[in-house]
Length: 311
Image 1 (cartoon, rainbow, N blue to C red):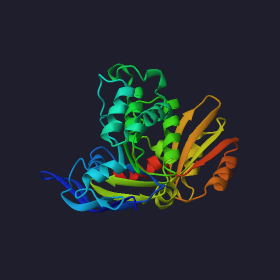
Image 2 (cartoon, rainbow, N blue to C red):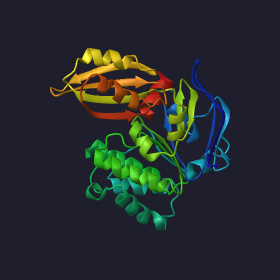
Image 3 (cartoon, rainbow, N blue to C red):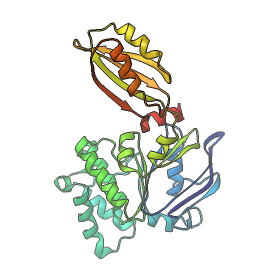
Image 4 (cartoon, rainbow, N blue to C red):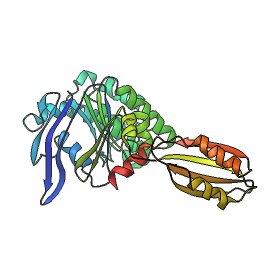
């Protein structure tokens, strides 16, 4: 296993930040590590990367204990923390040379690695500019480049796409997916569609405890969430009568009138998980002597599941 966390606990004074959590990751896995603010995500990542000691429990990276062999562990890890570790009076090229030397990249390979990271992270146009003058998006790219400069076995990325525009987010997402074929990537983010598009496994942590662990599809299958049908009909009927008729359907929990578009009425119909309501809804619409314009079904998204487990 690339990372093995066993019964990890961390107190700050009397405050319990991480509460006896255990999990493992393997090479070729992109793990989305999710949770609300204060859940214990960043603390866990700081312990994995040897920035903080645990109160109890153990963490191993590539078979090495993070407390007993912290220097060796750091050579195996690339880390982009929540607060980007940049020197604003250096250019990206100078900074990457400096970080590469600190990370033990052989002197004869530093220029090659620096130029590769500048290309991969799209820094060619600003490589000679002071970092302090760069936009937030470019600063984030420099942070990603420093995390990857030593070609690490494990990448720990805390909000890696923060401050990037949509095109940059797609570029970095594709880069992470490419890296994830050969490395272990632990990715923390609040952008849940990004997790769905990038990660092949998700851990959700809340109040210091792991509350879910599985693929996005497995979490959706286990979710208690409702099925949702969005219904649009011609507005030549009594909307209250139709709403009342829809509420009487078995397995329907709530009917919500969304809006009158001028030509149509739109409703959201919330039913029990797994319930297929389409046929009986169609029948009720016909009974109201109006026209069914569209009907779309949706199961619980990762965002719905996240809210369900952490609120």
